[in-house]
Image: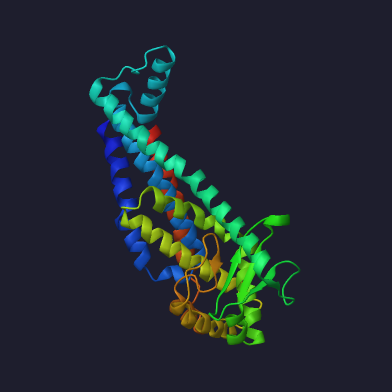
Length: 315
């Protein structure tokens, strides 16, 4: 049977990646210095956490069938294929396998559902924007739209081509609150989101929250990733406009945010996360750290490899 070491390792990884590690990473100060590296690490935490959760569930259920979880899974599949629908398992392990399969289908099923809901909500809002807004000539043709609303808000709707082309939406309140340089700064910020497709980076974390809402680590991941994506967009925009101007625009939009409705589903707002922290970061840029950057990438690689090694080689 698979050694208890594989199950213990996978269980320990699952617990750590759903609890303490996200808490430690959320409180760390270095991600603001290297937001791209921190994003890669968060992605590794999410992937390794998911594999570990599924791995420990399936390894425990198939424990009698092989020397490693992988061998046990291959044996079970071969037995089922030969006509034994129990796969050679007794009732207790069949119950465990059913629970493991339920977890697997939930995690695997949430992603396409989340993608579909986000895509349809974004398309619906994009169509509404096209109906009730007017073009803003300061942006690329078809990209900029102005909505009549007193609250200051700026957000983008990622997309592809044609009907689904991306949009950058400004309210009349934002046009009144920001000067020309500040408008150019927030436009550069939103274009950074669109060019780098930050919506695709954030999507798995929203799916995880839907699938496992009771784990604090999953909620921490979504919040932290949202803030880091804003920092990455800030950094890209700051290569085109004055960081101080962007900070001023963020402060104005962030101040007005308290009195307005939430950002539409599927949109990315300029004040989407950690506004005060981002303003401070733009005004006093932190020193970049090659040590933290390299360490984050190495740790991310290790986290991704670890559960697969536990599944295939530990016995």
